Image (tube, rainbow, N blue to C red; front, side, top):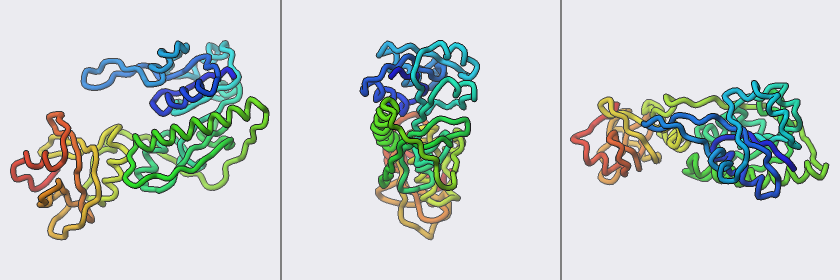
Length: 301
């Protein structure tokens, strides 16, 4: 089939690659415009654009895709597929033909833009992938394919995203085969929906007045993007990996617990071990090595 693809990040790139491997023709990709990135603020291409350039697939980049429906209408495609696209499609866009969305959760649970991060933040042990028919209401379309995926202990965003992307390719390949053969079935979603929210940089700040588990879940979900951190004397320490430690009733939240082997901080209950971090100077190191370089550090901000 001839497919128009809409998506931008790594998850979408894996899905796009799977569409090609299944033998379908991608007539064009629509992705987000290049954005300034890192300290140099140089424009950076999203992963879908990078992949499309390698495969010589036509690329369209729109801040507001709904303003370009007439241009898109001129493309000849059988259906369009979206994966982590990040824009709400208008009624006019949806009228262009059948749209299929790849969503990394067990819909109707975790509708919205951040299902992987939210699953980790909520410390749930199961999520999944849903292939659904596109409708105007966010992630509310009929289900074509769905598969549950266990969330592994201590799994972080990158590893969970990778596993969900692989499942997505399998399910989407099956769904496209059924659409092409005319055997596809659409099943209305059942149950009470839950919703995710957009995540900003401030969400990454660790709060040691919260529980150790809440902070560890935050590291698992957000250390990759937008980043998790705390501060020492106003300087930011980025946390890459952490785990819940044993409780120590002699300390109060934000206190640095004396420990021979780990960088340990007291939380509301229990403690958190900072296993690896990026120091204010930009150096990546394990938590204890960083702590050894701090003179008589007793408390974090």
